[in-house]
Length: 115
Image (cartoon, rainbow, N blue to C red):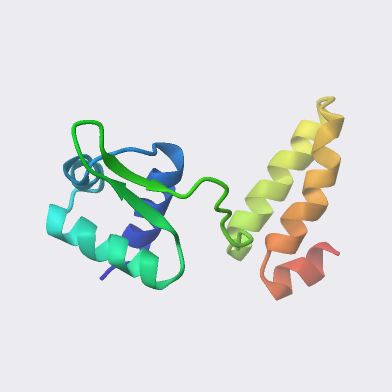
């Protein structure tokens, strides 16, 4: 089982609630049975997945469910911070608080270098 695919499924459920099993399978390029296994994995991790049956059914997350804090690799954190700094220099001053938020998502070594 690929953790990347399970996370991709979670991302799809957040972005497009109500997708059916076959639709999720097509988007992830996996078998519908694998979608069900990945959904079971998410449920075992405490993610509240709801399946609605019928003509307008599909899978969705319970309303109000929030993901745990985002974790970035070192390279991803650097890219985010550079993008935010560039945005701030072009006049988007709302980006400044996000720079500190990106530092909290960075791995320990990168956060120490940034701080």
